[in-house]
Image (cartoon, rainbow, N blue to C red; front, top):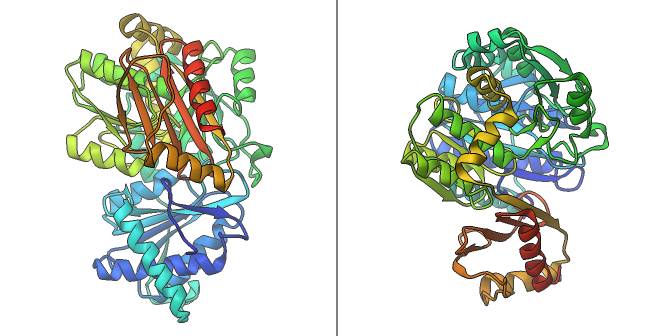
Length: 473
């Protein structure tokens, strides 16, 4: 029971669950699975972020995989997670992994696993990995390893540098000439993570006037959570305001999520980023196709889709569900309220670097500020406001909440007519007025998350209060 995957890979506290022993167990299981699926000779890419032990863990993983006969391509420098997905797609590899805990606190590290085609490993695949790791742990059989030097000598390990190909792929699909003509002033906050090299190169290539903050290597992320949200981006907000920037961009620790500060130095919620980009693709680029969002993401996306004769599909939390539904429906965009999104024609997973580049293109092509484009959307579709809460709990409280919501399926009186209730992922209540509320346990952190979207923030908070009181958290 050492390794269990959540919605964003396997994550654990360094020195507790994230240990060399468990990394070896996971990679032993992974090697067996790659062999069973006939992918062991197809190539497997490994990359790592700036967290404590990330580089060491990448080499531990490579030594086990190569020792089991798997051909490994290692990116031996700090790399954004989207780069691994890009490599799998571009070079036709059988899979890959990123050593990262994404936006989790600095005491965490982890591993994200990707499958052929560059998609996130689904639940069926990770369940097989967990079972294999449990079996290896139970037998206690030693795992054969191979040193990096020997693996390279035998042709099982190659050190690669795919960054230029990745950057060029982004530049090839954005309107570089339109951006060059605007001469935008951009502030970038990598949040001490791994986006600087790629995103800075893209922005300078299209002649943006660029300032960068928080770009040094700091495994403690400056004492902040490496997640781009309203609380963590105060420095970026102040910089945009003081220097008159057109936009501020931020990425999380492994650069698969995006945060934005607009021209008025206001934080742009990830829900708005997703709506902005979908609207831009439909209205200004004349694309057509569905959108995909998870259960905790704004329904304003549904209104935009309907206006253009399209459909917005709802899936459980976890980007593997979004990318899977996008492939099934040929959707042009998919995303989540935590800041991750992907657009058709790029990779099949989250990419904060590409999303940032597309936001810059949107401002340049429309000739409008970000705040002006959002005003255009609100005038056309109305306004939704979201209340978000992360609540801690004891083990007993978790059991009681699960029993009340998911087993007995009890609900409080919200004071608003209920249209229906879904238990697809947590408990989500849809109201007749178009609003909704959901309570679900996080798959990456020990938190109960409550999201509520209504016409006004006051009403969203009031409805959230009723559910929180009912759950007694």
